Structures are given as C-alpha cells and as structure tokens.
Image (tube, rainbow, N blue to C red; front, top):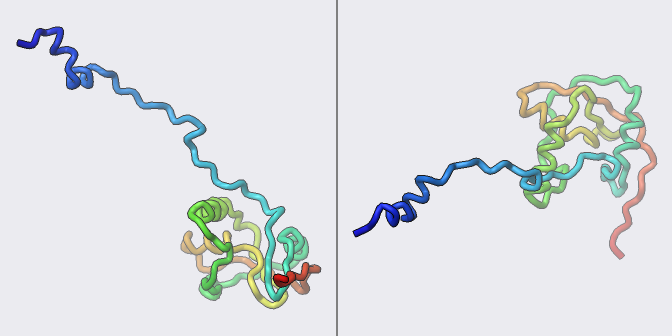
Length: 147
C-alpha cells in the first residue's frame, strides 16, 4: 500500500506541484543579423568595380523620375546570397530601406544601387519607384582576372 507521503513523491504529483514559469529570453538568445553599412559595398559591371558611396555622390543633384516597377528585370541575384544568414541580412536591409531616396541607374541604364528599395516597393504593392540615371560613371577599379 502507498502512503500519502510516498504518493506525493510520484513524478505525476511533482509535475502537478511544480510552478510553471516562463523563462525570460536573454539577449544572448537573440539571433544577430549583420550590421547595415555601405562602406564596403560596391557595384560590379563591365570588368570594373565602383564604390557605392562614390555612386551615391555622383547621383546627388540629379532630378528623380518615376520608373514602373514592372520594367525592372528580376533575373539574377544582385546580392550573391550563399546562405540563409545572407538572406536574413538582406531582408533586414530591405525592411530598413528608405524609399525617400531614388534608386540609381548607371550611365548604361543598369541598376547599380537600390535593390532593397525595389524589393520593398514590390512587396508593398507599389507600381512605380523614383530613380535617377548617372550622366557619367565615377572612376572605377579594374577587376583583375585570376593569374
């Protein structure tokens, strides 16, 4: 026969008596996504590499014009994503994108800055985005082929 004292020590009774508390989420449990900076960003085309900062400076003072989002090619991978972490980083950048700045086309009409703003506008259901087109390209750095 099981005594009252022994009955209180069964696993079922211990679970019933245990207070249910939610553990606080500590900062170390939050997954950090890469910091957003464009000091190391660049645009690569036609065998050259341009600093994003130089491209933005060249676009200053140009008059923005509306571009239908449907006219922008969605082929390719402008961010060269290799992992889910890369994807999350770009989602974070897209969510933080400031659509008060126009996207920037290079001299040849290739989108060289603003893919996060384009993605944000498309997902928001917009039909147009403001853009500028560079009248010339800043000095780029030639990309050397492997030796």
